[in-house]
Image 1: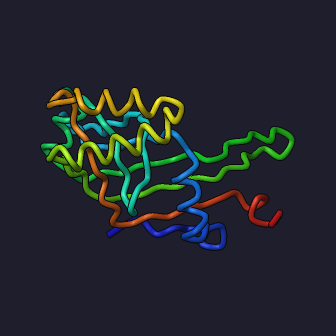
Image 2 (image 1 turned 90 degrees about the vertical axis):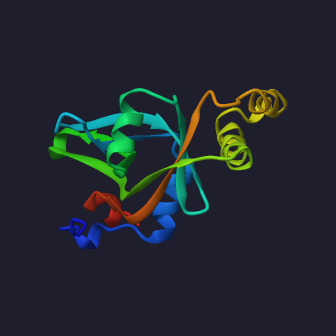
Length: 161
């Protein structure tokens, strides 16, 4: 069902994949667009309990796409170093496939927001708690349930270990 990695020797371990998910701050969400074209959008996220979480507006094209078809892909580029003299790139990345679910309930929304605040605004926890208290229904939390995940790195990076 999911594409098989062609160069399996360059696959990252599960621990390396998780480390990439935890340390990075942005990824690209891939959705099935309403017009038949793929729709990709960069976004900030947090990895928590084996899932990806992000917040977004309650409406808009991204939300409409997820409501029409919740199948997603998500990609994180951990390293992208161009090596001109070798005509290559030293890369490391993760891609996952799964389903997007809208999170409801004030406790679940607050828990995800606390994780996002801890990741992106660690020096503003008190202010973040005040913002959480005032959220109401002004935003949506999306949970990406991971069905398949893989990571890969350039051959040279693999050999440097």
